[in-house]
Image 1 (tube, one colour):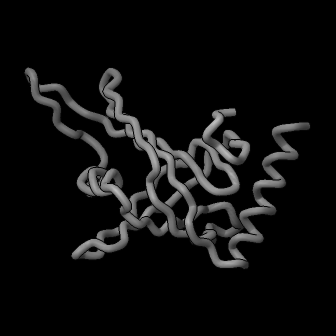
Image 2: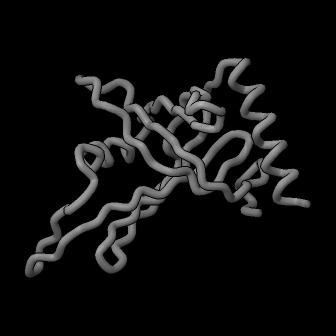
Length: 142
């Protein structure tokens, strides 16, 4: 485990909806997948297909999400998170901030990996999150 981390991380792929807060407009959420989770954070990967045209790169897929990705990387940007772990597509809601990110161009894809620290979560959602983490831990350690 990384010495900076306070809590164990669990590898699991689950849907995440990210809404940017504090922007002049209210852009629709970015839908991505979580790569791993812990008690107080999560990491995600955003994969965007690009096309090479001579020496230029152009985004082929990603829709409006591609325009919002740079805002995720702004310092102290507050994000509203919708973590889809509940039956019926219901979400646990939280607020967080990006604490680190890495960008990589590999083949025809551009990858953005980011770590998000969960700053706020309603008590009911926090209980559901803790129960989900306990379930994931039991599955990964049995």
